[in-house]
Structure formats: structure tokens, C-alpha cells
Length: 147
Image: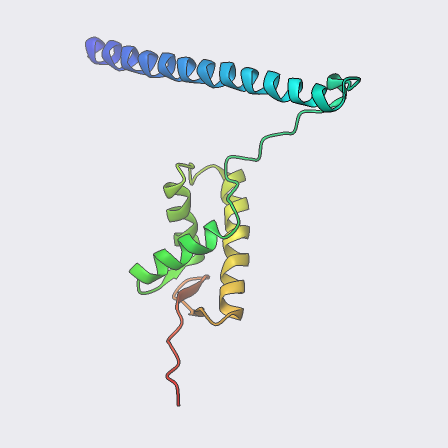
């Protein structure tokens, strides 16, 4: 039993050391890129005070680019007959390597998915109906046949 624990811990340590190496490489490259931008800024404004430029915070890990959530939802609904918003949230979080039990990103994703579903329904791309539980079930809207 002890050898399994040691083996698992050695493996985890190797994984973390690899992450540290990769992050150090990213940091080194970001510092080089910042120096290049600073030099370019000084070409245009030699008197610029670079310390006055505030760093911008990174977007949260659950941030998505415009349209990414909508595309993912439509792709899911094309492969499933119907899904509720909770199932869509869990699946989308899993696709993005987020822990579905972490309440903060789960709440943000639930709001984002709800807004995307309502928008898709207004555009008549999806339809909703009362499901067995408390959630609406969503599916791709039946196509209208031209008359």
C-alpha cells in the first residue's frame, strides 16, 4: 500500500514540476514580449512613464469567446434529442476542464447558458418544453417547411 502512495506522489510531483517549467517558460516569453512593447512605445513617446500603465487582470477561467457557448450548445443539442440546462452546464463545464462541483464557475456558466438558450429560442433555432423535473428541456427547433 505504501509503495502505491509513494508512486502516486512521485508522479504528482513530476506533473507539478512540469507545470512549473512550462509556466516559467511562459513568464520568460511574456517578459520578452513586454520589453519589446516597451521599446516600441518609447519610439513613439520617449517621455512615456511605463509604470503608470496598469496591468489588466486576466479574464476568469470560465470566460468564453463570443459565440463559443452558443456553438457548443447547438452542437450538443444536435447530438441529443433534448437536454435540460443543468445537463448542458455540466457537459459544457466538462468540455472546458472546469469542475462542475465548483459553485462559482457553475453559477456563471448557468447564467451564460440560460441567456444563450433564451436568445436561441427568440431566434427560433431551439425550442423548450416542460421537462419531468424543474428544468425546461431544450431541443433543436423543428424546421419550418416552405409553403
